[in-house]
Structures are given as structure tokens and as C-alpha cells.
Image (cartoon, rainbow, N blue to C red; front, side):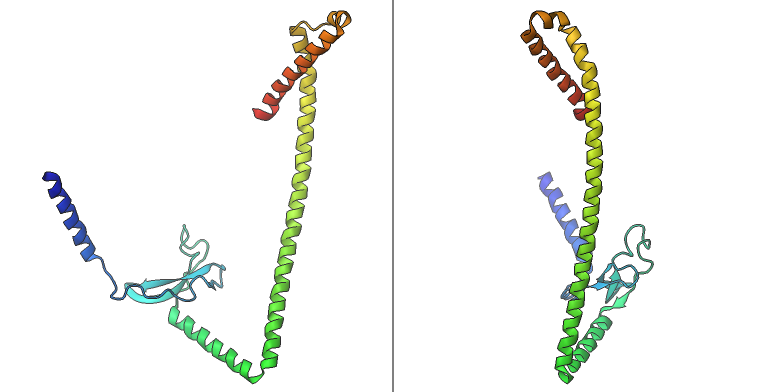
Length: 207
């Protein structure tokens, strides 16, 4: 019973808090049509819509880079631009384009095609530049990898030249054994080399 009383108190408290939350009658409304499509003229960051300003419900485009921590380091100002002003400018521009298209449709089509071609050419140039940079980077990495592998190979050979004789001496693989039983000498030397390879791998690769 005591638990039920606490649960009821918690429920009542939540309802009280919810009742004090400020809500707009019609919610936030539709999403701003150009949010994320506008870019800051200073830093190039995307601009998004803020719905309130100083407690007033005013839709304004602001630079997303301005609020990155620490605030103001990526962009010096928020660039608050009223959404209705932006939409009005876009509407006027679209009307002007429509009038221009009606006046000289052939010229309009030609200009649009030139712009598209220019954009495509620019994009191709960017892709070629990226490809050339990637190839140069890959070539540099290949040289570094070759040098690294050469160093590892040299270090491996040097360690093998030191370790194999030590293992052979420790295991009694002598010149006398080679003279008396060459097959056994070869078998034991191969075993020493295999053991030395494992030691070198652990020292130079796995460790």
C-alpha cells in the first residue's frame, strides 16, 4: 500500500511538471523548407532554423558553426536572418527567372546548359585532383611500406644469424655430428631454424 502511495505521488508530480511546460497552440508547424540548404557566407557552414528569439516565436536561419564549442571560434557571428525574408527573396528570384524564361526561352535553356556543363566540369576537376592526391599518397605509403619491410627483413636475417648458432650449440648440433650423421645434423639444424624463426617473429612482429 505504501508503494502505491509513492507511485501516485510521483505520477501527480509528473503531471504537475507537464502542466507547467510552455507549449505553442499548433506545435512547431511545418519544417522550414530551406533548412540545411543555406550556407554561411563567412565560414561555409550549414544554416538551420531557430524558432524562437528572446522568447518570441520568430523563425530565423542561423549558422550552425557559431554554436560549436567554444562558441564563436568556427564562425564569428550567428547571422540571424528571418525565414520570411529568405523565402521572399527566393520567391522574387524564381519569379524573375520565370519571366526571363518566357521572354527568351532559347537563351534561358542555353544559359542553364552552360551552367550545368560548368558545374560538371568543375566536379570532374575536383575528382581528378582528389584522385591524383590519393595516388600520390598511395605511392608514398608504398615506399614507406617497402622501406619498413626491408628493415624488418634485414633485422630478421641478423637475428637468425645470431640465434641459430646459439640454439645449435645448446642442442648439441656440432660439426662432429655433421661428419658422423649428416641426415641427423640436417634434421636438427632445421629444427633450430624453425625455433629461431618463432623467436624472431615474436620479437619483431608480434611483440
